[in-house]
Length: 294
Ligand code: NAD
Image (cartoon, rainbow, N blue to C red):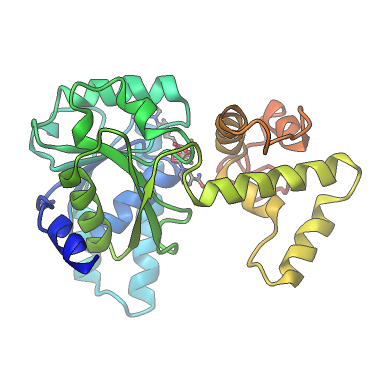
């Protein structure tokens, strides 16, 4: 097994320059982590405000590292310089890996992946940070599906060590090896998993959210459930976690899971989570979800 892993590692391409598509909660975190660990990264979004938000979040995290003495101000400036915000694909011809982190919608992701594929080198690896959508399905939009795999980070990116590297039906060993090596370079602990809706972690997490939504639907206060799960020893309860994830992202991901595993996801719809979505209470990203944030 060790020999096999070594052989796979030897197929990795060096990542000198990366890119991330989408400067939201995840894209901003991925850009920060990549730059802080020494790999410069292009950060692309459709909107200038999103880029500024992603950059200011990264700057805040870097500031904290300086405060804690984990980084000098000069290293902070270098890391910030390593994040190159852009609204165009102008410099994509030189990147070695692109991490797609746009909204959790299969059609949008397929369109964005097909669009970026024609802007990059023939051997650039494309990796999706999708939470739930099958990599084999997303790959159908690509001319070079062998260069594509999943690279699923967890939120908040700078704190969560795990990265799921997802092998789609057509993902090549080089794509997997390059993504694993890049995750390690970012200080993460990657595991390679097979493809299916939700991969590994979200096949556990989304049924849990479903159970939570059913309890709330039966009249139990969500704050009581959060307090109980904290007493159980988890760092936060499901309502707070949903606010961190983003209610919109959770609803989109839940829909993908419900389609993939209807028998496991027998959630009553519309649930408390759908009601928040309808009311545009998207969680911490817009200051109100289950809880209100100032
Ligand atoms: P978000 O809503 O915070 O950000 C999405 C960003 O993508 C927005 O800034 C939007 O402007 C941008 N965008 C949309 N279309 C684009 C395009 N064509 N080109 C460039 N940018 C575009 O969402 P998020 O929470 O960062 O989630 C992004 C992805 O990461 C989703 O697939 C989600 O499932 C996944 N994910 C989310 C979490 C989480 O906890 N939020 C965890 C792991 C994975």
